[in-house]
Length: 420
Image (tube, rainbow, N blue to C red; front, side):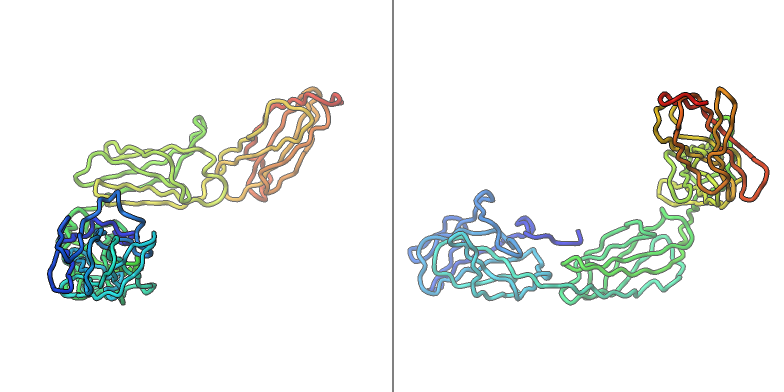
C-alpha cells in the first residue's frame, strides 16, 4: 500500500497504555477505573464512535472519560505501534468531542515514549488526531548498486538511497515493469533488498525502484542490468501472411520453442491491434488465421509474441506490403425504396489502390459509371427508378490501366417509376 488514506482505521494502532493523572499524581487506567478524586475512563465500542476527527481521522482508539476532574487533571494517550511521520509528529493533538464537534487541545508530544498528553477539565470523548502535513514534494532517490549495465547473478542485492522532506513510506521494485517486491525496511536513508530473479531469462533487463512518501508522491529510478540466470527466453519466428481465397482469410505461421515449457500459446498483433485468442504451438510450429479486411492496402506490421509461465517473452515481427488479392463490395441491402445506398469496397492487399463504382440495368444490360477510378473506397448511390440492378466495384493499383479484381451485388429498387 503506497498511500495512507484518511480516516485512519484504529486497527493499525496498538493502544498499549493509558493514564489519566490527577492533581495529586494518582493514576487511573482501563475500563471502569475510578478514585474518589479522579475521572472514569473506558474504551468505546466501535459502534459508539462519533464521526472521526476532521482531516486525519482517528490515530488510536477513542476513549470516554467521565467523573470528577480535579484541577490539573491530564490525559495521556499512546500512539505506539504506529508511525505517523506523514502527519508530522509535532502536529499530533488530543481532541475532545463536545457539542457534536471535535476541538483540538493544547498537547505535548513525547516522541521518545510515543505518547501525547493534554490537560482536561470536563467529561467527553477524547482521541488522538493530527493536522496533516501538506506534502507535494516527491522523494529523492539514487542507486548505490549494482552499477549501470552490470552483469548480475540470479540472486542479487539492490541498494539505493531514498530521502523525503517528510518521510519515505515504501520502495517497490520492478523488473521490466513486472512487480517483484515491496520493501518497507531500511536503515537510515539506505534501502536494501535481495531478489531471486532465477525465473527470469538471461539477458538485458531494466530494474525499477518506485519510492513513495506517505502522501503518495512517487519518484521512479531505473537501472539497466544484464542477468545471468541460466534460463533462456522463448524463441519465435514469423513468416509472411498468405491469403486463402477460398476461406477469405489470411494465414500466418512460424516456429516457437521454449526451454522447459510444453504448452505454448502465440499471440498475434496486426498493426498494434491484438487479435483474439492464441495460436497453439504443436511440434514447434504455430499458425493463426484472421479476417482479410485487416490487411488492406498499404504497409502493415504483423507481430507474434510467445510467453512462458514466468512471463519471459519472445517476439518476432515482419513489415510487409502484400500483393493486391481481391476486392469485396460490402454493406449493400438486397432491396429498398428510393433511398440513398452507401457502397463500400474492401480491398485485400495492395500498395495504393483505386476504386471504380458502376451500375448495370439487369433488364436491359445498360451499364454506366457511377464514379471513375479514385482513392475513395465508398460511394453513395441515389436510385431514381424502380427495377433490378447490378452494382459493381473494380480495383487496380494506382496508375495501372489493367483492372485487377472486381465484385458485384444485385439490388432491387421497390418504389418509383420503372427504369426505361
